[in-house]
Image 1 (cartoon, one colour):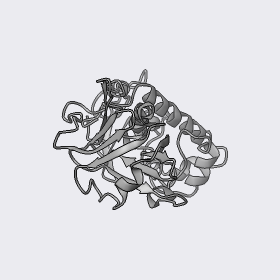
Image 2 (tube, one colour):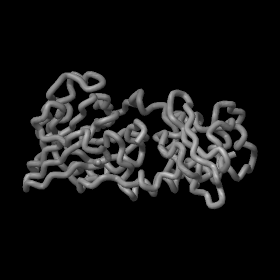
Image 3 (cartoon, rainbow, N blue to C red):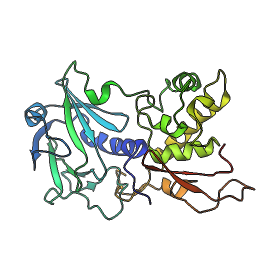
Image 4 (cartoon, rainbow, N blue to C red):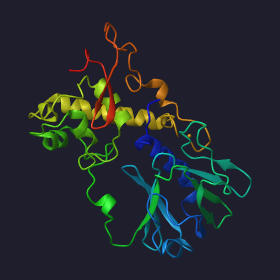
Length: 297
C-alpha cells in the first residue's frame, strides 16, 4: 500500500479498544523511557497523571483525548507508527487498532521502541510503542484551549457537517476539491485515503475547484457529505484499514483496504459497471490522489 498514516477510522478503532481498559481506572504510575517523542513531554507530565482517574476517552479529529478527574486532558497522537499494547493482570494481551502490518512489532514494555508505560490500579499496563517517534503526548490543563485543538473544523461524523455547511465553507474557493476537504480548519480528521474513496463514490473529480459545488442548493454537496459519512462508518465497522505501518482491540487487522475502490489501485480497472477506464494516480499538495478520470467529473 502507498505510504499512509492512521486516519480517523483507525484512530477511532484505537480509542474504542483502549476505552474499556482505561476509563474508570486510576493511573498509578507513568514510566517515561525517554524525554520526548516528536515533541518533549511536558515537565509535569508524570505528576499531573499519576493518581488521576480517567473519566472519559474521546476522539477529536485524529487525536485521542483522555479526560481525568483533575480536569486535565491527555492528548495522544499516533503519528505514523504509534501503537498501544494492553497487558491485563490476568495475562490477556491486546493491541487496540492493530492496523499495521508486521513491520512494526507490538509493545512488550521492554522493547527499544516502547517509550511510555501507563500502570493502572487494576494491574493493567498500557504500553505505547513508536519506532519512528512521529507520535506525541501532551496535556491540556483545565480551562485551557490547546493550540492543536483550538482551530480545527467540524467532525465529519457529527451533525454540524451537512450540505449547507459545505456549500458555505467552499463558497468562492478556487482550491482543488480534494485540498479543501483535507483542510483541517473546515473538516477535522479527514485524511487522504477516505477523501479519495468518498470523491469516487460521489463521482467528483478531485481537481475540480471546490467552489463549483457550492452553489445554493447544489445537491452534489449533500451527496458528498453522505458519502464521507458512509465511507468513514464502513471503515470504522471494518476496524480501519491495514496500513504499511498499522493493527483492532482483539489483535485483528483492519480490513477496509480490501474494499478500496480507488485508493492505491493505480492502473487497475474502474469498478463502475460499463466504465472501461483505469484508475489514475496524480500528486496533489505532495500526496497521492487516486481517481477515475472518466467517472469523476
